[in-house]
Image 1 (spheres, helix red, strand yellow):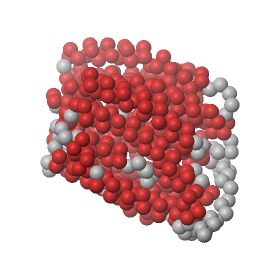
Image 2 (spheres, helix red, strand yellow; image 1 turned 90 degrees about the vertical axis):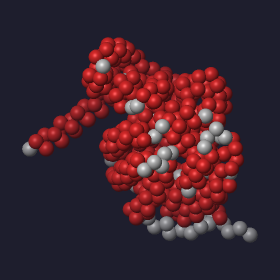
Image 3 (cartoon, one colour; image 1 turned 45 degrees about the horizontal axis):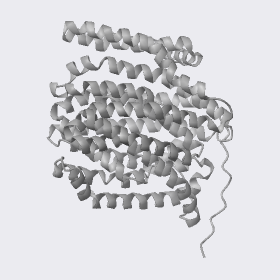
Length: 511
């Protein structure tokens, strides 16, 4: 006879202490600030790493990471999202969740190791030694993620964004430096895979020491059933999302081989940095806050739409700036062998003008415990994306795959934002479409003029390219964001606060 599960207290939204909008803004700023410092270091390191690596090396490493992501069906870190969605039950559930997650991580690692020969046969265009070795390295990641899950979820539940930012920033700097060292010593694709696994291990150790909690309960079969009922659909939905994100590489690698995959991977690595990480950091901040507003869905949806609107007014100009500056950037920063990636980089940059909305939307769906909705949204996108990516790869290689990806996300992103609003009655379609349309209406004339300016400056050689990168591009981005502030009250308020904070800091430093 199975043991009965202990009685669980009702999950109530935590009583708001202070302004959650301010908490979200502060948390997002702290996380984004550490990201910005790291990206400066990463940008400099990428210039050097690209000197040591060829597009083929990027292709093999990215293919290994894509296959590894494809194999992790039950992502251990998703259990942390389940715990965060139950803030009142957190410590009671921790011991059961920790053991379940470790079992899942070990089983996934063994499965990945056992299937390496199968993938070497499927991707026979790749060097078997390198691809197999990188897959073996990547197979360790689920076990390390399982160790990381509980302490990271604990800090996120406590809204400890400063601690998270410090740890993530320091580890990412170390990963970047290690990648550069590995590349300099001729480790090729391993310089892009091994440091990530090592960095995750370091994060797990540090978070274990920093995060405090009782975890007074014990493993319980009844609690395991409760957790698995939420975890399995959430993990499968996250798995489908991860497959969709890497589906371009999986399809392109099979159809076109390592060179085209390398061009796509290199372009994507550059183009996706800004918006993807900003949106991800905001998602990390928002999910615990949305979870505390479970009993007030109207306030939750209103805040969600405000966040998405402001995020669009910032991320779309960043995306268009990248697309406009692609040619001078590649001419100055990278070797001639990477120039074929320019149009791929431009298309992926434009696609980022839609992708920015996904991380906050996923956080909102998780906090609403709508894991089934999450699953069906991603399932439909997978069905749409696979034939699109296959056709794009067959016709135009990396460029065709990038175009297909942009089309898929232009359809999917507005859909998921709309789905997040369905918990509140009323017509939200206009507000959802405005999140994506308004930034384009404001920014397109500015960036069309900037594009003409970049073409004109190109006749002056390297001097013109430098002027485009450091004068014209930033001016266009700031101009588009400033113009958006004229048409959006929330954007004006945030811009005023940001300007006031910077002015205050400079004044204090001056004194």
